Image (cartoon, rainbow, N blue to C red; front, top):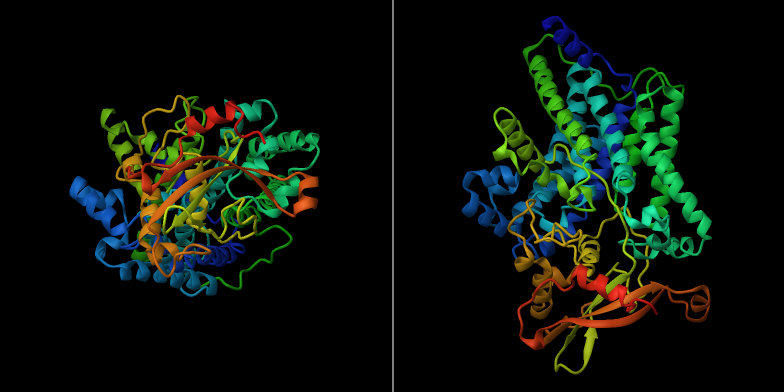
Length: 558
């Protein structure tokens, strides 16, 4: 038995045939970190600053008062070093950008990768609803495995099998999870082959091409569902096969990612998935040479430092790999807590205290590691809405004459916004979509029968402490860090006396309507969700059950 274990460890440390592509993968990860982190420089004060929608310092203080020192593990962040100033947030973001530049320029890539990952996680773990998003979880996990890869490349002069396999397993799990969420106990639209009848206009942030895709013949929608099943349920297994199969996987993953980018704005998610796919191309493939020009000389393989590095890589790699296995196994559970599977990871470990030793101990470690986002579940679009709601925020000096605020990217019947902006990720605009359908992250159980909201991800942000109410207050008080995130603030000179929120149903225009009006969207007024003149406390502005009841009554038919 000891001999078998020693043989296994030897195989895990053996060189993987990705030495040529690995340095370029690190550089590409640097680019993606920059795409993710640079926008933080212009958004952090309005989202997480002292006067932002979800102040990170207030979160840490509340967590520490409630949980004590465990709060440092619940919300792991460098912000704990000096949480009382927005300057520390800026320093962390700038440090992440510096690490990303180091990766891009291949300057001390191992330390640069660690710096970029640590700073990115430090921001997103305290970001509340604005960073509990699949693209952030995906980058955090990929970034962690990139750190292991970069340290191995620096201290061994090659990439061992272990980190290379973990990255390949992550790629498999990403796409297979997408397929399992859709086709294992599928939602009604997948069962009835009608998903793409609704997807293009009712997805979170459609592009202009989505309007044209929506006009395609119905048989193309049904064909696309079959193709999606093949790419997400069958092709992921190709990543473990030979060269031809791997080429097919790269082609399929790239094609579906490009098509998604053409129809919807999903930040840097699809670019990251393409970059991760590049690791399926190996050194013996004809498109690569036999030696990387970026490779650095390895340290003495027998040195104590090199041995320590391998022990750390081995322990962290095996641990994160076991988490990947756990998440893959959970895909086969028929009891789904949320149609967006990435929001489910706290539920997987919430019963840790009820398990006997040693399983309870391991489960607690998993729960802590999940807070560091070392490994995460994936999978979105178990079903799709049959309607689209716009929440239009308006202000007034007298309660009679109202002027609307304008978002930069939110689809709107007023601004007719329908834009391309990926890989840029406008967090306020995107998260506003989930508010319009009543499934903010503070309401972690939006599936029927619409159970009592709970959010183990962040128990301090609840429907009684929702960011949307802070947003309404920021408009009323003319708080610049927040209003600066908007396209137009009609009350920049003087704050309004009243703020109201009106809900409108949106749909794509028909061909004839487009020719006559040149508009992307047609709108219909539904109801007033909130008005400060009513002098009632602010709550989340929409409720999914109420919206579906309205849909069933035909209020979205126009």
